[in-house]
Length: 616
Image (tube, rainbow, N blue to C red; front, side, top):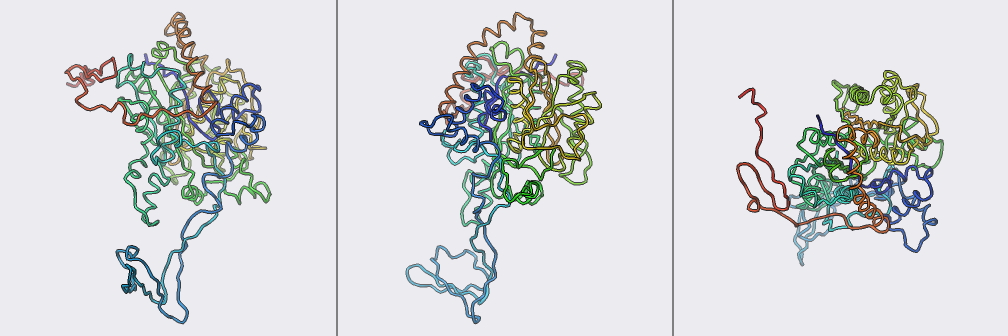
């Protein structure tokens, strides 16, 4: 029987705040929470944002609300973006143009028509023809001023020795540390019971690190009169978030990788993690994604595609003279495009036996993730049929696990919900047809990009963290940025609403997480509730083992709670082991049967079965 991938921890950072302990989820439904819970999340955000300690929490709430979620761009000044303007110049009366440079400033290869004359003190007089082509330093205003950004004042690079790390990797270090600590587990203690190659890490960024400390700076350097650094090419790679977790946070020796699937990247990597656990090759997996795409160049690139909601279109939608940045993303309503965002989200998975043995938190479990391409397409960004396949398979597996009523009466869906005119039609049709096919009268639809924007690689991680929060607090976030459902949306069997919906979390068994990635990268994840997960664990392992787990869990929960309380008072340094515990080949103990690694009690087994025995 396949092992069950149990969710034992989740953490990260997105525009709603710290992901662990449901804080980012709680920010999206904060108006519906009991005062105690909302104040805890406000306190967490205040610490994250560096709100002055002498400010009362009540006086800080408006500032916190205004400086979280989707809002006007703050990472750079959208009214003053550095650029160059091309110009053809000529002198008056056709006279040559003369100017002076130092010899160090003279181009290695002279432009056509330049004449040089040496002067004193290492200077050179340059004479140009009467006309020439030049680039002038200039600034421009962004036509898009809305983005989802991590809370104002939060600086992940200041919490550890970030050494010019790209922003996406800074977010990774914080997020993976948050996820690891959210488990409450002693990770050094895990080394006593888990083999070194049984811990896996799967993570990536859809676009790589494209800011000035990554590939973006490397590509800009020649045109900016600068030199590329030794770090930019390496740190710009898409799989670098996984590499950082292995090298500096977990010290993992197990399977690793980054499966890139555009906006479905998180689910692609989640699939890798659960497949390893179900097969028995992996016992612990950290899975997630990180993205930091809020740069002028990336925003302009998506805008020219017609994908982003620009200011002019938003004003037109509202018949207003101002831009409502907060409502830039409007899934399934009259809308203008998606809203780019940044985040890093990670989930910790364990096989069911290890989760019980360690007393780990049981947030839920992953039934499966289904991935299908679109087949032949009219164009790369156009939608196709692949998402019908992924959603149909996910629903069918839920039926196989819990029967028709699990799907019909006890499920809801986190839509991809980007806020584009095309998505509102195509994804609503998929969901509505599936609801009709499987006899769901009014399928509850959540679309949290309305709060967070589109974080690209970790987007499904945002959806997953929201689903886990719903099982804790019984509230499905409404699509608060909309005031109506667009006429071309297919919603005869869907419940799409701007209002939060209260549910019985004990009677809501399944959340479907849907992703529709650029290029035809479709994925749908089946997430099982904590209640269903515990029922499955009891059926497999018996009530006695579950009771033993619950006793062990008390200490784990206390450790996790202490971390949450400490983090809600001040930003604490993330886990970052730079230059610590580095191993060389001479440190290993090698035999024909096993490899022993210092720091791990269990060896790596080399007793491998022949998988092709019937062929040899």
